[in-house]
Image (cartoon, rainbow over all chains, first blue to last red; front, side, top):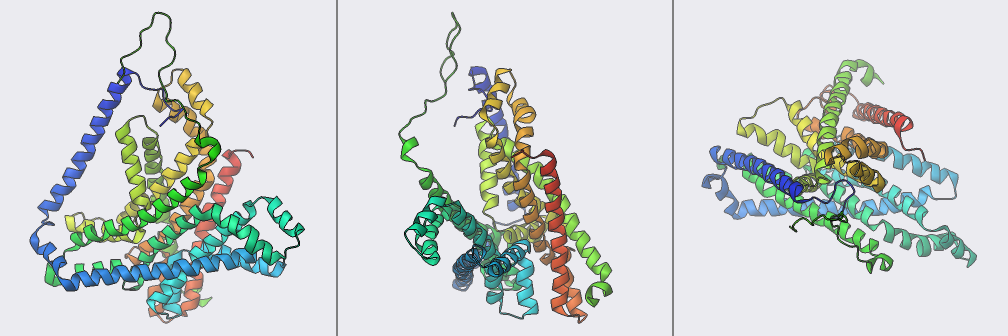
Length: 288
Length: 214
């Protein structure tokens, strides 16, 4: 990694950095050890707290919760992509009324906390939890995606649109065959990142008692028969949840890296940094 | 309309709770975010690793899960604090990851010549970062930090579901008293718009004052 912020360290700086590195590692290890010690002293690793997870019923409950989370995510993802496409088209429409209406809708739903929308649909419209969750996520993420799509389409080179019109294409054809494919390709990382947000926000379903992953954990943790295995539940649920989101984030990064790969810069190797030229009579410091 | 006038104090309390949560968590997030951004560009490898892990884990954690773990989990270790403090902790740590990324990309927008010039004057890494690069990066990170803090204000609604006094929680007592639920929510929405629009106006002023001239 090269950076302009600090010199390539010489032998003494390297030694100092090693010292800092060791010190910070020790601090981190101490904190981790403290946490593990705390977990042990409060008895979080006792068999009584972990045996419930070997039961078929508990495993089924967790898996059903995970399935419900993924179902809500899938529905919300598909619907918000559709919502985004419709309203992005609306905001780019040639008709002023359509443009105005779409702008109001998109800006309003972007400004509202997604939880307020979910609660509104759940409490005021008395919808099913799944419907409320999916609808709330769709409205919010769809509006954000509409902005992503719109900026993507605006970022397509103007010559493309002009050439398409010059060939005699209609505006629908220009949009669907020329602009949208190029825009989606450029915006794919941003779209996937927004889907990560949707996946994370499915956990809001827990607050309206939708039977998703977190809710399943809560059910297990509040079951008095098992001596409240709350911390084990957190230790099982969070790696799975965070792992799923990281996987999707990693996909977004991978797509972005693929796009940045440009044959013009790929072939050029940048030389590794090294200490500057020596003054006459100087000696090179020993290599690391 | 009656809903608001009859329960002005209830709404006021809720709004105040949301503002309080937002302000305290913003401060925590800004401090932690700047610190982690400094870690992420530091010459010491293990500090970089700490920053990277912090950001990647927190950015991929659902906020509800974080609240679930912090608000319901920490008391089990005998750590009993007011719910509001737990909420500030969870919100602040979560948002700090996003602030860190905004600051880091801001650092990258500062021309490399600035860092190189500072080094050639013999400045150390803390001096280069603190005196030369961060003040310039600050100018270009105002808009992304503004939108991160708006997201923070909106996320504070989750705290209401974990028995912290804030605006969204107002709907419960009101629906028990039999007020129209739709109007209750309309005024809650107006309250949130008030908060987010204030933040956005504040950052608009900041950007006018300090932002990069384009």
